[in-house]
Image 1 (tube, rainbow, N blue to C red):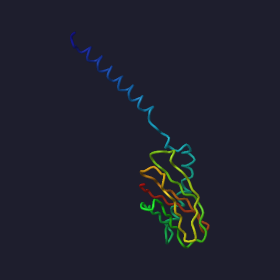
Image 2: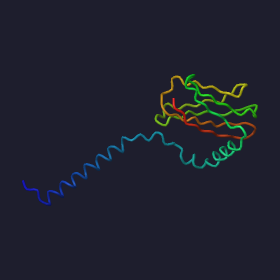
Image 3: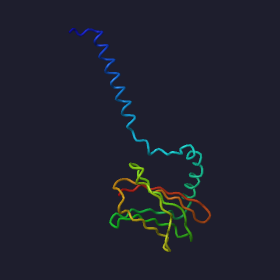
Length: 146
């Protein structure tokens, strides 16, 4: 069998079609579950989020988030300026949506909340804290590794 220019074109187009079929197959296997289901509403609410960030930057003493690896817990140290603190702590795992969870802010008399990390999957986590105190709302986000 001779290999002429017609055969070369047929081989090229056959290879091209196989690459396209493979690309379509791989794109259907991609997990897009980490994209927000309500991204339009999230985009419209961004100004409120920005105001929370500005309020947090204006604090004299900011919320401190520490990952105590030896104690297997995360400590949230709220500013002592506020008597009552409320809100929500959101643990976001970028690699697995099913591992995400939310907790209410429950700071003790020493303005510290301790959250045990035993049982959490190892890896990177984002701790997102939406909290209210003194009539204002605040936001803080920190990446930790468990």
